[in-house]
Image (cartoon, rainbow, N blue to C red; front, side, top):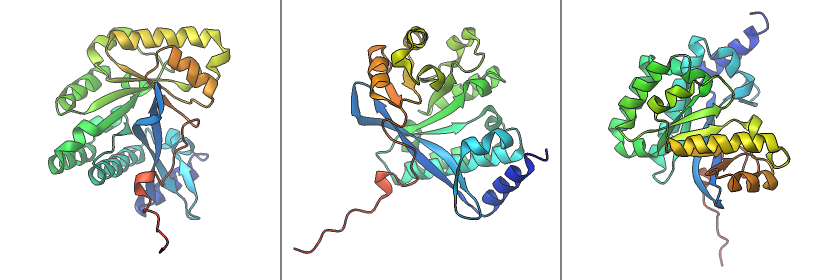
Length: 256
């Protein structure tokens, strides 16, 4: 508790002073890596010096606390606002099973969908494998209620946890995101190639699109494409940025 106290205080201060933002990372099509299929919105906070802090530096501490729920609401708010302001944008936002029963999170989602019905078909909600398996029945019911509105769901970090495969026929995830531990360096790892091939086969059977995370080299991207992975995400195609292209002002043309 003493070790985590500074992180909890930092996150609480960031929420109190509205020092939160999203960083956007492209997810590209494997068959045409110049095309972006969608973006993932990743929560960030800033500390008192203005330094941007990524989720990996604080989420593991706050995820089981009330602050974790508040962070989920803020990420959802910012993501839905981006979708509303940018009609061509398709965006995934991270959530967890703890968000399902949090009234503020559900009200936020409902309010934005009522305001702009086009948001639903452009929104992807990502739930990690570990979170989904804590309360699978609750997650299944939640997905059933919102998929009819057009929202897509992605199972994040697949392969990192203990997913019971029997739930696949009930979950109906639209997207399967393959955990980066199986992706990084896959061009030189026959074992991971075999595992990813199996994951792609499972996804195809259940009509799920596949995304490989942590793609950092062209050699890995080539192998993943050969294995049938649909989309690629990682530093090879773009780091998360708080200033994506659609937010940048148009260039000022010099007077001729």
